[in-house]
Image (cartoon, rainbow, N blue to C red; front, side, top):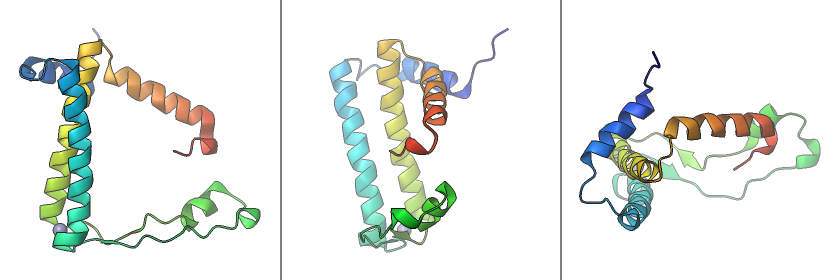
Length: 134
Ligand SMILES: [Zn+2]
């Protein structure tokens, strides 16, 4: 018996729910909207709540003197100070959920397994190793 992954269960769950946004065009625009809302929620954590601070500065790297991927990783900045408070964390997770919802809806419409997407991405990223900087 093949075990159903959590992602497959999620896709099946979404497939049963998607009635209003059956059109791929609706799903595409809803995914874009969800992504924009996620970014807005992140920025509001900094600008409205203030639980995180975004300190955007140029990455100061001297590649000639960096000797390992671990050293590079330790020198790169996320440009975020602090962590989201519980309220902001809840809002961010909600928006991430919306992104996953519409991504799953698009995958369902196209007959694509998100589990396969995840496995293929892990394999591709492993093959590229440290050159897979995205
Ligand atoms: Zn907050």
